[in-house]
Length: 179
Image (cartoon, rainbow, N blue to C red; front, side, top):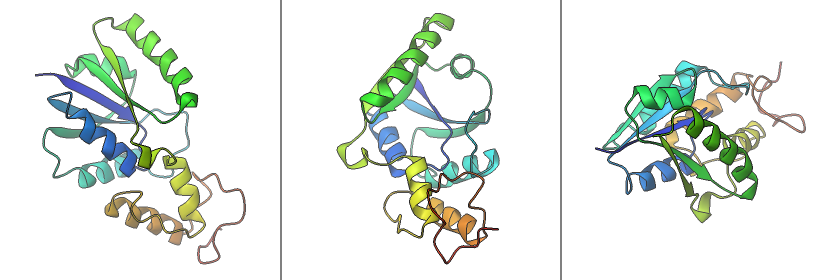
């Protein structure tokens, strides 16, 4: 059985992530979606919330499991018996960073490969950051994230939890409290 580890912050999980998981299942027998705890990012959602949202969104996905993790990704992949780390590329700008990570991971654990899949064209423009920014201004994000994620995200903004993890360039949508 070939298992791939698909690591990320998933703050929040998007339909682009889900597309990559589905396509990864054409290559691997199993995929572990590993939700990172230690991240230099300032997530809007707690680690527990991100794991719970991913599990709910992927509950019907055969051969996919969702696990929380911390520490070095490549070490976690080794501990879980993964033969590869699955990563998505949207644009050339993603490549340089991902390439450096892949080389470092290969130096640490030579037998674990990094496999890059190009994002489907329909998801090229989205990222978790862009989805959060749009939602924080009241934009309709239906179809960009799983419905359970959309509801949680909108709930955060309706409760006024905008400032912690969202890159807003202007004041948020009038319907949301910002204090």
